[in-house]
Structures are given as C-alpha cells and as structure tokens.
Image (cartoon, rainbow, N blue to C red; front, side, top):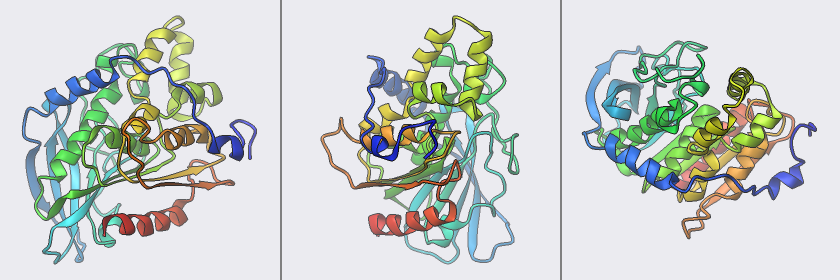
Length: 328
C-alpha cells in the first residue's frame, strides 16, 4: 500500500466528518425543482450503427435550466418486454463518444443510456455534442474550476442536475421498466452516479468506481493529479479564494450524497489511485445511507496493486454478477 493515503485497515473504518452546509438539502431541492418543471425528453431519433444485435437512439433531454443534453440510448435488438436500465455517466473530459463504444450493459440484456458531459468531451475519447452555455463565471479553463467561487455558478451544479434529469428521461423512454433503474460510472462518472443515488427517489442500484468529488478536502491535500490538481493550481494563483472555493465544493461533496442514498450500492477502488484517492471512496461507502434510516445492500471491492484503473474488466464482471442479483 503506498504511503500517500490510509492503510487498508484505516480505510475500512474511515468515517470522516465533513463540512456540510446547513442549506445543502434546500440548495439541491430548489435546483432540481426548477430543472424539473419541463418534461425531460426533447427528441428520440433512431440511428444506424452497423450493429445488428443492438438498437440505438440519439436522445436529447432537458438538463439544467432546460438546456439540451445529448445521450445514446440502446437496447438489445428484438427485446420486446420492458427492461431494467443502466444510466451511465462518463469520466472527466470525456463526451458520449460514438454509440458502439459502450456495449457492456446492453450486451448483458439491459437498456442503456450514456449521458454526454456538458462542456466536456475534448480531452480524450471520440468527443461529445453538448455545450455548456452557462460557463461564464470566474474560474479556470477546466470543468473542475468553472464557476468555483460560487455554488450557484459551479460547473458540477449543472452536471449533477443533468445526471438527475437523465434518470427522469430514461424513465420516459419506451421499453424501459421505470422501477428498475441503476446509475453507474467510473471516476467523474462514479461521482455523478453517487450524487444521483443521493438525489433520485426510487433508484434501484448504484455502481460507483473510483468516484471523483468524494472526500474533496482530503484529496486536495494528497494529490495534484487530475481534476483535484486543477483546483489546487487555480487556488495557487487566486490566493485567498480558498474559503469561497471550499464552500462551493461542499455542495457537491460525494459523502453528503452518500449519506442520503438508499439504493443497493456496489463500489470499486484501486488502493494506489492518485487521481481519486481511495479514502474518498471509503468515506462515501462507510457513511452510505446513514441519514435514511435504511440498511441497503452494499459492498466494496479494493484492488491493492491498482491505481485509477481499479479492477478494470475483473471489476466489471463483478458488477455484472451483482447487478443481475439486484435487478432480476
């Protein structure tokens, strides 16, 4: 175990106190109430992908402020009955890419919605198609610091709202069982899925691997890699902005969402992860559902010699077996 984070034994008992704003629930209730005033779906258009065993649609739904957000929706070809659906969120800097890139969930027999990341998609992969028209507040060029000095302006307020609205959209799509929806993602996607679990009633399952935005203050002390490094670099120039930045970040802290979640949950983490330090995932896991008065099924799988890639395909196989048990 690298020395930069806690030991495995310490991680198993890691339940840190977090600075949660008193109006956390009101902030998100107001944000989501405003976003939910309009019907979620804008358009659903079939597309030809060259795949004979998969049907795919180009979906546009209304996200934060009614902004159009793109997504790929896929189902196994020939499936007539309503299917459980996996709503997947992509990693930091990635867009929805091309529809044939993510086939695991649809090949496992699920309907699958892959949400585009607004204002991202240019760092790797095959791009995206959703702009962020609100990215005008003070902040740096990277998504992690756009609007960092005020929670109302922050990029992740908009992206988390989009993620919640993606679940509302998939529940309206044909051939989906609205009572069996799972949220899934790795890294930034894992953080978005965790936020959805804390904000969406009736979610059936959560799959979160190496989640970003968990244990944010500790992560900023441990690593200069990736999104956390962008925040640290911004604060190294804007000296004295720490208080405002930390208050903004407290509204998107994954541990706060985890405390409010109720769905069965499956976590994964690489213990040598310097992008999203493992203590963040364990903090969310150990405090999961503590405010809900429930005791949902949950498990976490740690990979001692892996970094941000975690268990990779080995972990995906574990996810498939677990999700089948939860949703079947």
